[in-house]
Image (cartoon, rainbow, N blue to C red; front, side):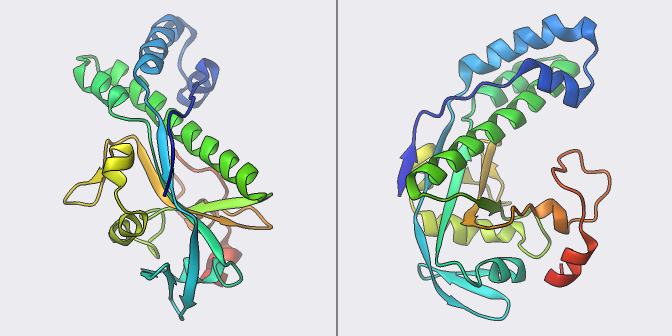
Length: 222
């Protein structure tokens, strides 16, 4: 198990303004919140270099741990090495959000935290690419697709080992990660970039990163 700590994270003010349609009159307040958030971010990541043991019709076994997903099985059909991970921003931004009595500030801090943990995951991806000579990497996370539900957090954390001791992230009884600004999943080599959004038909998702691909969804039976 490898740990990246600390991970440098800088969230761009204008990217938040654009994504949230923040009016120019709010720029000063948003800038102050961004500075406060940067001061408490403690981004880190844990990952493991893992290998495929066996493949079945709708599941795959990775280092002795069973994962049930047709989508994973299809992507890992010709892959031997994968990289399960957990990335976190730490509890700082979430604490600022809870302490604020202003609904708009809470909203802005939530956006900043989301952007920050995504930046941390991008740093992990870039690190994996350089360390292991991988030109293309895609990822999937438990709960992103109906085919790979949130229940799969348990085998993922089991595969990684002492996640809480390594980066301070644990699972709640409902299998949500604590701190909340955390992301988990498996990075895997791909020649063509893949995003879970391509298999999701939900039109009003604010986190969409790629267009729904009906043909691909039928191919994956997702």
